[in-house]
Image (cartoon, rainbow, N blue to C red; front, top):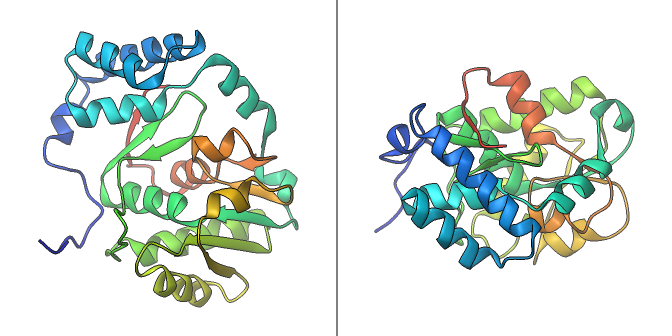
Length: 234
């Protein structure tokens, strides 16, 4: 069935699964999973153990997995994180879909997860196809305001070529800010891991292998979307 959504909003059940009453169990599950990961346990088996113990539904388990991290990983990521002031007048590489989906989610009232490493992450997924929603343009304009306010740039956005409509999104990015470059590449992750300008991403696989990075999604959401549905499991 074609995706007919016009908003990046919450899924059915999210208000219950991530509401105030559910959060203590979710936070405890994220802490337990982090403890196990810190001691070398494999994530799939550790997540099953934690999820079964807390009787979490699949979407809650996905949230816990996105928020948990081993102690060493958290310390390493924090040591390389840079603040916007340090990037004034300097280039930055932006993990396009990673940032845009989180900003769209925040604007659309979807769950935004506060993870142990300080990042904000979403539960959205493009599944090979990106569909523009009503929050898309406002999300890009929000990013433009924040980056302009901090004087960060030039900005190079990287988008996944295998995801359909990535070319159209790249054109929209250049339209929102003609000073931006937007490139469609086979896989942004290896590019973002290369030495070079700071990286803006919340992708844990990139964060563990890149150089300096900017916690851009969280900075923008905190500044621009005060009413976001943030569930802090950090």
